[in-house]
Image 1 (cartoon, one colour):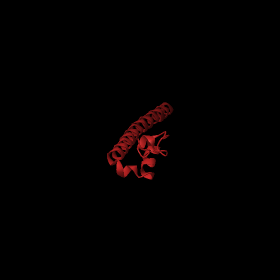
Image 2 (cartoon, helix red, strand yellow; image 1 turned 90 degrees about the vertical axis):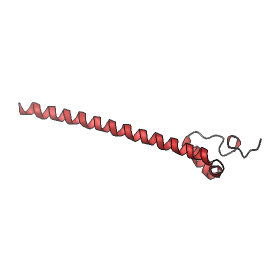
Image 3 (spheres, one colour; image 1 turned 120 degrees about the vertical axis):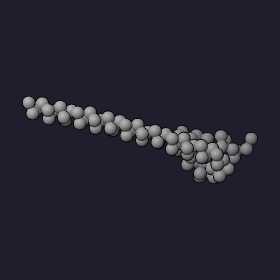
Length: 80
């Protein structure tokens, strides 16, 4: 087996994250040899970021609603 394949390549052998793998594929020009793998990794990253931002937006909306209700309760208590 040749050392030019991705699993045996010295620069790509000990990658610990998807970001490292993407960077390594570009640096070793394997992204041009394996364009579908490169595209799949990029789509996975975009998918993860999309859902992370979606749930962050939902969480922030919930926190702002809770703060609003808390402040509204304090204001209502001061009026009585």
